[in-house]
Length: 406
Image (cartoon, rainbow, N blue to C red; front, side, top):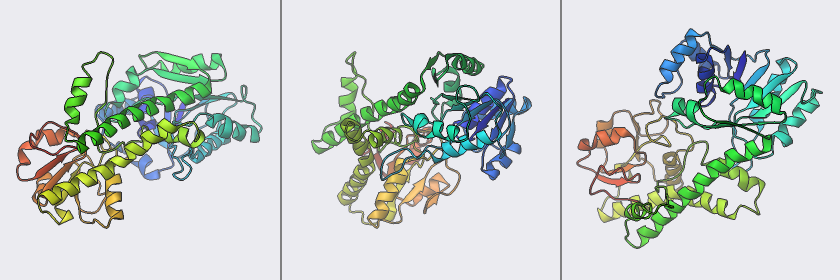
């Protein structure tokens, strides 16, 4: 049996994939409401293919509880936030989960950490917890790090087809866990040491953050001199060794916008490029605010309540709002006493912010400037409804020919 700890965006799909493969799985989460909903066949978020996977897992006997199980294999997929002041990882959830496992686990158990952690986290925080409890690493407890590599909106496919890394102290145990993941993974699974596994995941997301920052900085440069950044990127990407990313209103999600800070926090004197990239991407909501101000001035609009932000999620076609650029923008507006802006997202069903609309046409009827913060398919499919508004298209959806751009 596998006990999977943490039933969020990573832990739940992972648990369902194992269960679908015929493995006995118990999913554990401290959130009683979440566990009750799962036991009543209600998923906490929408994802293509997730409902079908859920039903298959239920038919194979997956269980959900708030209790840790006595078994030999644990997968930890708990949150790993960072401390905003120091930019260092806050390991409290991982430490708590490990200690709860140690309370109940069988001798020789494997604890697999899937949560993204900064390089050295296992050595600095996890091993000492095990040693304090007088467990012997390598005999009583086996530690591994198998960082997740999936993204909301494409989770099921990526769980099966993305390569994986397993960091371990013991090659034989690593091979055993590799065989476990091979029950559903069709991609290459690499075995390495734990610190290399920790670093590789953080580096992957930092690489993307830096490249997005270049596109965002280029967008600002082009704005100052009235050039089309999208046309410039299109032409540049025709070069066989150039593959620039697209600019946007900011970087969200719990990976790209968070993981680089782990390196900045741990290596402050060595991360000049990474820190600059983070600052550029974090500055984009403020840049969008400036573009809104310019459009309002150009058209003589003085009431901020006539502005509508389309999209609360951090990326297209999902309901995940973690580190959302729209929420960052609303925070900037709040700092400047700019209250009353309208908000709509077709995927976010729960009311999260003031002046959030649940009906798209009602939303449009209340605004004069539509700011597209997320390129959901919904806005592209309903472009015909947006005929009376000025449009600031921060995602270059190419749906609105005469729209303003970043």
